[in-house]
Image (cartoon, rainbow, N blue to C red; front, side, top):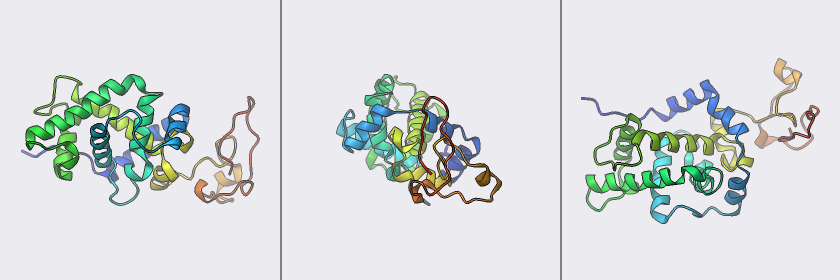
Length: 226
């Protein structure tokens, strides 16, 4: 019988880009407190050292750095820690018990081991079991699929959200997907850029005032300057 496998990173990112949902969610789901905390420190604020190691290993298998930037480059682990301390604090008990479950499963498979020291193939097998909702040795709580879904969502948010919201460090996720960022203060593109008669420069190559700016909408909304 074939062992369940996680989707390849390439397929995973293509699905995300095609659907557009996670990118859209990351653009509009602000994390001001998490963002401030993530800018202030890249060390654990909520997670214990053991939880930090387990979470980092899991996130790096969900979004590995194989053919481009992944969870490590985007700062997804720090985003997760600060998000669970602030805006997603209600998810912290589920995530922390799930991280303990990862280490428990690793110890059951290899006495004395923790999830972070398993081989990439072993880690993928554990995560695939979680995604499928069945994993031998998993504790009664939390439900394996619920934990995986939350961890996957946090990975996506940390990878794709606007950097102002606490993740996507150095635009790593946007670079990987080819999303250039909003082009003017209203958060969209000019008619010339939409017609292809004016270039769209990625946000990480822009300088303020170099791109044509559209008027900000009523209410003083603002975004990245193009």
